Image (cartoon, rainbow, N blue to C red; front, top):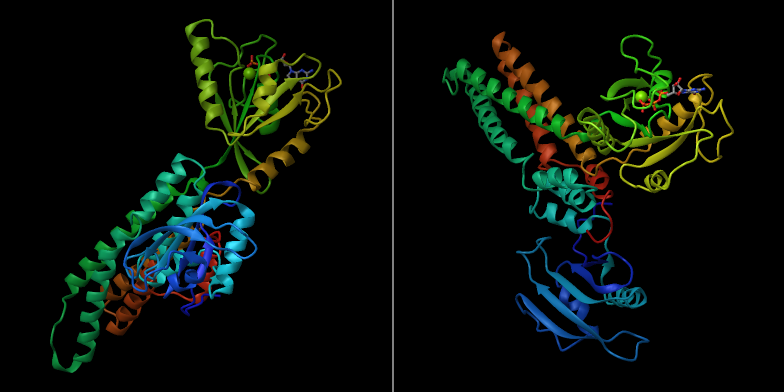
Length: 446
Ligand SMILES: Nc1nc2c(ncn2[C@@H]2O[C@H](COP(=O)(O)OP(=O)(O)OP(=O)(O)O)[C@@H](O)[C@H]2O)c(=O)[nH]1
Ligand SMILES: [Mg+2]
C-alpha cells in the first residue's frame, strides 16, 4: 500500500463505542477545506492554530450537532501536514454519518497506522520510534509500557546515531583514499580505522545486550502449581517433570510438606516451560510457614499460568472458585488424584499415581505457551536485533580486512553494508514492503 500521494485522510482516533467524547482526525494538505461544507461558523481560509466551537450539520439529522474544531496547520503537527480534529459526542451512528460526509467531501479513509506512517515519512519520527508509538498504545502492563516509552524517547536509536555518523565519516575517508590511490595521500591511518571499528563493535554489542534484556518474550513460560496443602502438587510436579533424582519434590501424606518453592524445566516437545512447585495455601502459623506462604504467593504472582490443584473427592472452598476467575495471571483448575474418586467434568484430570491425564495436561500447557500474548514491542525488538547482528558482522569482517591488510575496496564494501543495516533499522533506508509490514500492525486512526 504505502501511498505517497497527498490525500486528506480521515479516521476515528478514539475508541469506538458510546462515550462522552470522540475525536475524528483528518490529515493532509488543506484538511480544513474538507470540513467547511458541514461546519458552522465559517472556517477562516488560513487560520493558523485555532479552536472553533460550533456545530456540525449532517444529512438526515435535523438538529445541529455541537462540536469543537481544532485546526493545526503544517508543519508543526504530528504528521507534519495540516491536521484537523473534530471533537464531538461519541455516538456511533452519528460518527458514521460524519465520516461518510467527510468522505463525500473529499477525504479518504485512513489505513492502519497511516497517521504515524505520514509522521515517519515527514521525518518526525525514526522507524524505531514509530514502532514504539504502537507499542505504547498496546502495552498490556507497566513493564511493557516502560519499555515502549524508552524506545519512543529514542532509547534504541539515539545511541546508534553517533555510530552511523562515525561510520559515514570513516567510509568517506576510505573512499577518498581509494580515489587518490596513486597520489599517496593518507586520509586515515590503519590504527585509526581499527580504533573506530573496535569502538563501533563495542557499541553494537552493548545495544545487542540491552535489546536482549528488553526481550521479555524470551523469558520461559512459567507455570506455578498452587492449591491447598496435600492437594497433590508435588506429586504432579514430579510426575510431569519425570524427576526421581535429587531435584524431585518431597511428597508425604503430611499437609505442609513443601516449604520452599522448587523449579524444574519441563520440555513439552516444541515448547519449554518452567514448572514451579509451591507450598500449599493456608494461614501461616509460624515464621517458617509464613515465609513459605509468602514465597508461594510471590511465585504465583510471577506466573504466566497458575495450575490450581483440586484433589478429587474433596469439597472445594469458595476462595478457590474466586481464584479461577482471576485474569492475570490466568488460573487453570486441575483435578488431582483422579484415581481415588470421580472428578467434576470441565477440568483436566490427572493422577500422579497412575499417570492418567498427564499427556492431556502437557498438551493443554503446550497450547497455553503457544497462545502467549506477544508484547507489542516484540516485532520491533527482533527487527532491530536482526539489523544490529548484521551490522556487527560487517564490522567484524571490516576489522579482519584491515588486520590482514586486504584491499581497501573490501573495507569500503563492509562499511557500506554496516551503514545500510543501521539505516534500515532507523528507517533512513526503507522499502514499501517494510513500511507495510510495520504499519499494518497499527489500528486505524493511529
Ligand atoms: N492416590 C493418589 N495419591 C496421591 C496422588 N498424588 C498425590 N497423592 C498423595 O497425596 C499426598 C500429598 O501429596 P503431595 O504431592 O505431597 O501434596 P502437596 O500438594 O505437594 O502437599 P503440600 O506440599 O503439603 O502442600 C501424598 O500422600 C501423596 O502420596 C495421586 O495421584 N493419587
Ligand atoms: Mg508439596
